[in-house]
Image (tube, rainbow, N blue to C red; front, top):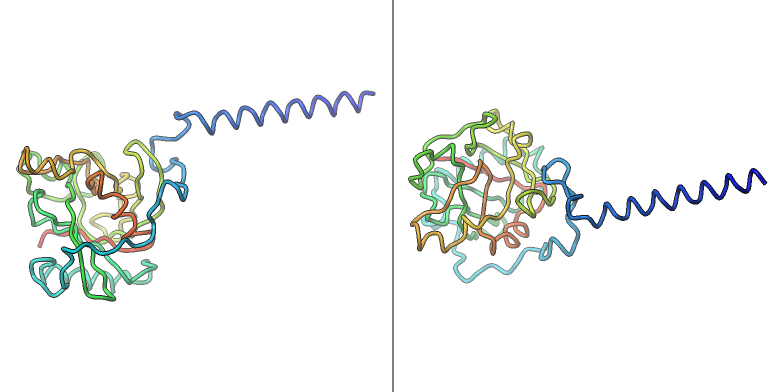
Length: 234
């Protein structure tokens, strides 16, 4: 009799704990707003994850209007230097922070086909304190709200305070605080194209690579985990 009563109590406890856990999974507040504790995205969240068709504006990599030769050489040297920490070498992204934020300066380069496409990307407010649209300086310091230069490797996806995002790991001394600073790829209203029409420039992030809200799926599809982003002002 005692054993039977103990068994009933155990079943009730398990049922109660299961209901509590199920409730936590459906409460919006249970999704952490901090990058390190955010939940992994589901396949539905991340569609499309395969590389999308290249847009008609895609041009040959050899064109200096896409990626400037000096910047491309630096990016390729960095890919070679950090090759053992970068899983995929088929595609890279290059953020040309010498260009103003009103220009498409986030270049996605397919190294197999030799073609690329470019999108808008915001820089950090600490890199442009006067909000001129031009990046003035880089920083790797905590609390700087600045963009960092160097090579990053893309990591996993999560849902945080900026919505769907992708973690980045800094590979150089100039950006090795990126993961702990929560420097990530995410979308933002202030990185949408209509900001150019109304303000002539994008808004500023807190150091993250913020792209337009309609561009995020394409960015995620072109990057994926284990690829390099190279950021510089040459």
